[in-house]
Length: 438
Image 1 (tube, helix red, strand yellow):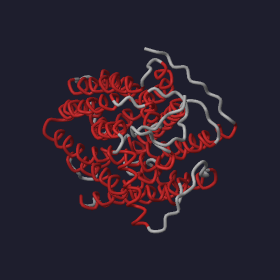
Image 2 (image 1 turned 60 degrees about the vertical axis):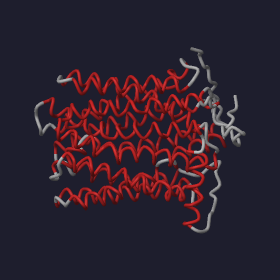
Image 3 (image 1 turned 180 degrees about the vertical axis):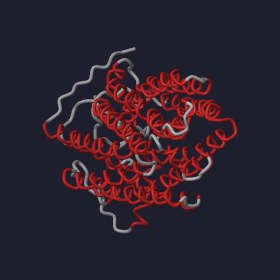
Image 4 (image 1 turned 180 degrees about the horizontal axis):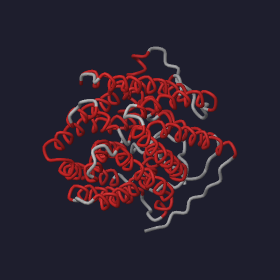
């Protein structure tokens, strides 16, 4: 293995850009994680079965699939900042709708509709925030590695997730399962105000397309050309269908799984512990990401190893019957995924031209959401039939299907696989790759 020694010389403006990015990550993650530790229990408490609860989560993924491209139009025409602001307001409103359905024990079809609208809210974020960061760093002369910034962001969002998940579980324990959702809406409104004051588009000029239908078609064509049209990007996206789809289910299934192992169905704080453990692992894993990157010449090497380890962890969770061993396995899962996440982000961003960055990142998110829409109901039904351990074993079997696609992405020998610096603004060469500066 060849050691990679990236240089890091941020300008004051680049440091300010990173500060804004970290602030947005912390606020978003804090708001979101308030409900992550209790979401499944919240849905079950509202009268839904396991199949219905995870089907509601699947409809959230359906919403992301439906709206990724249209909201990509917003990011590419009105700007990344506008897209972020619309996302905070949409998520605040739909979170309160979720709370209202819990209060009234609403029918499943209403849960499905609101879940789709929640997906709409998140699509305003997906792609736009990362694209905003990478474009702004390039414009301000940043010469360090993307893994360094994404890794720090991962660590900070992990810390916010740790606080939010524990706080959400404690709030639910002290009041009821609905209060974390109300608190989430309040924080999202506060983040709208913060972003309106500090977020500015740098290094990107909105396209200003006139007609939304034509704009949507153009974004869709760009997604196909710069996403599915490029083999290393295409195979990475296909892998995301399985890894993200399974990840959605596992994250939420861990809540009732741990409560079941603990033996007290009303131990909401134990449900929050799953998210807290993963967030703590995320803090360490985010810090380790640039260190882990230095151990391997190629980014895909680390990604493939991570997939193998995380699949084995899922199998271990499915076979395990010990609460304390489950906590150890969760720590390993969190560390491996967190250390690899920034590497994948950097690999993907290095293969996308600036003008199409938000579009292709949104399309990548769409592929993962499509996996969540298909896989979550299947695994939810498996939990009804064979319990959570059986569904986790099946999760491992599905997740390993991503391995061939990561290998195929690696076989394309993209310059991004060995890149160590910030992405260069370049046009694709004849092979369909984007040359990356040394």
